[in-house]
Amino acid sequence: MTVFQYGQIFAVVAMMAAGQFLFRKSALDAPPLSSLAGIGTLLINPLFILALVVYGAATLLWVAVLQQVPLSRAYAFTALSFVVVPAAAVFFLGEKATPAFVIGLVLVIAGLLLIGAKG
Image (cartoon, rainbow, N blue to C red; front, side):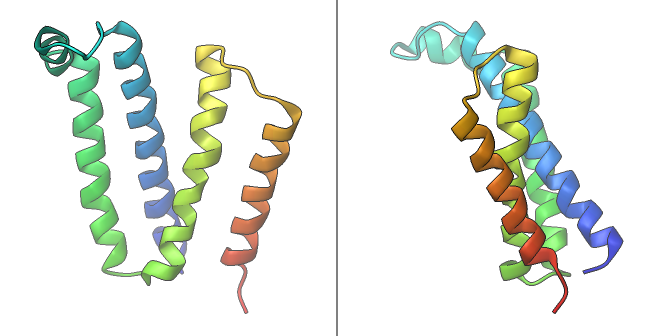
């Protein structure tokens, strides 16, 4: 893969992470979704709408990536979202991370380095 292709994949991951962060913020601000009023409130929440737009843009970029990179190589890098999203949740939302959780994130990164290695 080229540097540009890696950049596109990392942009998709960043957009997925941003979308998840926006979804979480929307969820925290929304009333329970057990009623039509709750669903209606969520559907007009600007953060929720922005999350949908970000996810839509990420999907378009992902299709562009798949025009250039085999799915078996590209898809593995979406696992970076399993690192970026929890890290953002810890740093920006004050969520907790256990030592075992951090070790798991390091193992995900190690696996991606192996997949990305040439050879």
